[in-house]
Image (cartoon, rainbow, N blue to C red; front, side):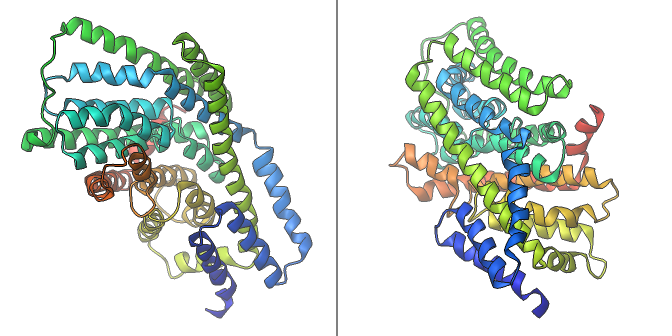
Length: 444
C-alpha cells in the first residue's frame, strides 16, 4: 500500500478539488503540477506535458470536428427544422394514446443524429412539447422523464462529440466508433418506444389522446411529415455517408455538416447576424471548455503515470489472473457512480486514458482494437445516465430551467424508468458485443 501512497493521494486531491466547485480544467492541471513538486519530479519533466498538449490537443486535426459539429447543431436548432418535424409527427399520431410522447421519442433520435447538442435538444423539445403535453393532461413525471432522456441521445447516436473525443483518446477510427454506435443508439430509442407502448396499453390515462381538432387528410399529413423529415435525413446522410464511404474524414464531414446547417438556416429565412453571432459564441464557449479540460487532463495524466498511478491500477486489476468480465463490470460500475457527480468530459478525459490500457491487455476472445471499440460504445451508453442522475444531472436542470414551476422531485421520479432502460441497453451491449462490432467490421 505504501508504494502506491502518492497515486492514491493524487486521486483524493483530484476528487476534493472537483467537489470544491473550482473549474475542473484548472483542478486537473493544478493537482498535476502540485504533485510534480511534492514528489520531486524535475521541472523539465513537465515539458513532456507541454509537448503532449501541443501535439495531442492544439495541433490535433481530428479535434477540429468538435466546433464544427457544435456549430452544425446550434444552427439546426435555430432553423426551425426540429419544431416543424415535431408538429408533423404529432399530427400523424393524433388521436392515439401517447401521440405526443411517441413524437418526442422519435424526434429525439432524429435530433441526436442531426445535432448531438444535449442542452439544445432538451431545451428545444421541452419548450415545444411540454406545454402540449400539459394541455392534454399527460402525467408530468412521464413527460419530464421522456423529454430529458430523449434529449440525451445525442451523446451516443453519431455524429457525437463524445465519440470524437473517445476516438482521439483511444487512438481509434472515429468512423468505426460512429458505425459502432448506430445499433446501440437505435436500440435505446426502441426501448424508449417500447416503454411508451406498454404505458399506452396498460395505463392510457397517463398520456391520453390529443383533443380532437379539425381533421386533416392523411395524405396531406404524411406529405408534410415526409417533407419535414427529408431535410434532416439528407444532412445526416451527407455527414455519415461521406465518412462510411471513405470520401471524407470526420473533420471534413463535420465541415460539410456545418455548411449544410448554415445553408438550411438561410433557406428557412431564420439566418440573421444575431443568430450567427449567438451560434458562434455558444460554439466557442463549448469548444473552449472541452479543450481546456483536455489540457488539464494531459498534465494530470503525465504526472499520475510518472508517480506510478498506471502501475497501481494495473496491479489492482491484472494481478492474480483477474477475470476480464469482472474488470469490465467494475469499470462500468465506477463510471456509473462517477456519472452522479461529473460530466462526460471529465470522465472521458480522466478515466479512459487510465483504464483503456488495462482493458486492452485482457482476454475477451477478440483483438484488442475490437475490445476498445466495444468498450468505447458501452461507455457512451453508460454515460447517458450521467445526464439524468441526481444531484448533477444536467438534462434535469436544463428542463427545470425552461419549466421552473415543475417540481424537481417530479423530474427525478420521471427519469427513473428511463435510467433503468439505459442500464438495460448497457447490459445488452456488454452481453452481445456484436451489437457494436458487426456494423463497423462489415463496412471495412
